[in-house]
Image (cartoon, rainbow, N blue to C red):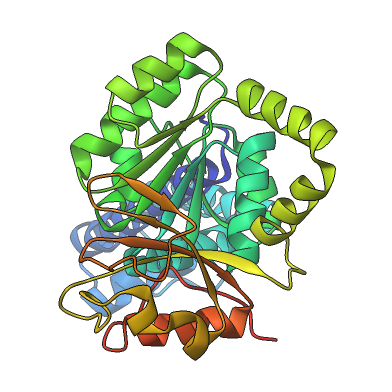
Length: 355
């Protein structure tokens, strides 16, 4: 982590102020004991004399001082002025730099991180990471951004995203992001090696987490897949395919883009996992379940538990436990379908805006 980050500045100032307060307390104790031993005063008078001496308020001495007491007072004044001036200087620096506000914000962020559950982690806030965050925010998804650059983190925080500065290839940084409670991590770093290390670290800390990784080369795609990435996206390959499709089938691409991304959509695509314990539709055919009639949503495909994909399923297609239904409809239609498929289970992945 970079030493000039706001978190580091806050921690440094906090430690220095606490150290100065400890030194001031020690000097006060020494002064009290010194007057007690040198002048033979009571503890109350010794403490009072120590305080007015260190603060240089100019009050009259409790009792006339002996020569030894005067020399002791000179030293006590010097130590008091230095320590109090040091504290005032650092308090002023903390106020001017906003370190106190940063400390409050850090405590709030730690409390928020401790409550995160079923969230997504975005590693890297470059151009790709920024667009991923925009889509997640549009969907109402809980997510956290991690980046090594304090400047990138500052930009993320300006957008009101939860963000922490750190190296995502380190286990402690992922643990700080509560990876044990996360459902998915997206490695969108510019380096293929960093993305691979991130996937390996994530899988070792949470074997059940879904990992999405960016790859810049075909060789990196294979390595990331062998490393355990559930999905690997190559911007060059994907971008080339989309550009070709936009040239050959522009209306199809406009329609697909319109239901996959953006905040002003009329139609959405969503996936629903059929659970044998919560879905009453398991064992029924699409005709018997009457999903289209009851919800208005359209079942585009069925992904079987073994990975087999049934595109455009017929009415006779039977629904099985572990099936994933890929459906399209309006926000209300998909909410209605969610209630039909899982009436006893609240899905955390279905976050469609209300119209």
